[in-house]
Length: 351
Image 1 (cartoon, one colour):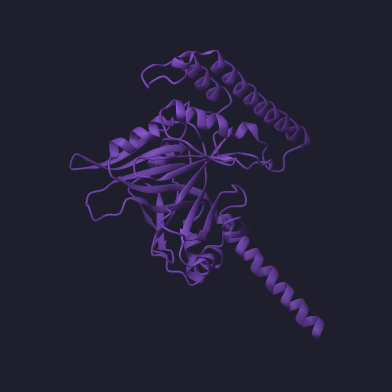
Image 2 (tube, helix red, strand yellow):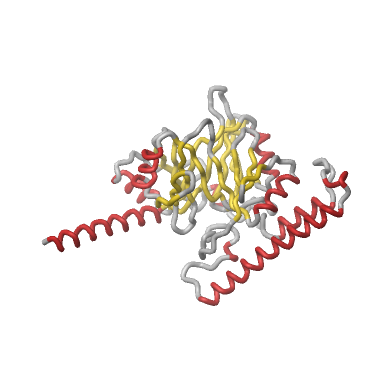
């Protein structure tokens, strides 16, 4: 009898694990983050300097109400101008992409959450939302053929954009236990260890994440952008006149309203971890043959070796310059700056 109860318990736990995994698989990754900004033109200029392009925007009564800055074909940064002085600036919400919004909505209802009904948004995609324990909106969307996002695929992908993947979000919260339960047991994200808190992996395929840490002071969220080479990304940002802070392997820049974007170098080797990004050719598909795996590893090694060589070339070129030309103004483009920009482009910072 004891063996039967043990077997039953194992079956129940296994079934629950499969259900959680199935739920996680319904969510593909981060679709967009939304920011409320004090000056729309200044924020547009910030992202434009980083190489990102504006895909489309919404207007009402001749005024722009929302701007969609494109990271890749599946990820965007939405900018909302502040219309009232009482409105807080900064991060408004995050939106996750799913393959079947109806199935995901029903699953969340079954888990005791209270998602809004699935509706069609102004851009032509399906959407629903719910609130996290802090009252912040969490959105979910499903891209539909004919929508503004869908028809813009392959367009407005800045050739020299500094990153082509929004990898994760770090959020400081007052109650780690409550939010951890919400994201893990509620949304079905996979819990992983993190140095400063708890990291929740959104999707097994994309490896994108949201990291929760205990709030300390007035620290805001941090948005992590994946780059092939952090040193070159930092150099590119400095050339464009942005203040860059370095901490270990990360480089940080802030937009005009103080929102923090961190550049993180990609050190992962797992196949297909950028399968939804614009550099899919560099990584093998799932269930790839040994020949495809070998080719992918070979290309990636060449890719990183070239980045190291170009970084060395930039340092050599810098030493040859006179001190007066090593720190030119924004309007004085020197050969060194073109070498840096060319290096960034050649290794795929804007691929």
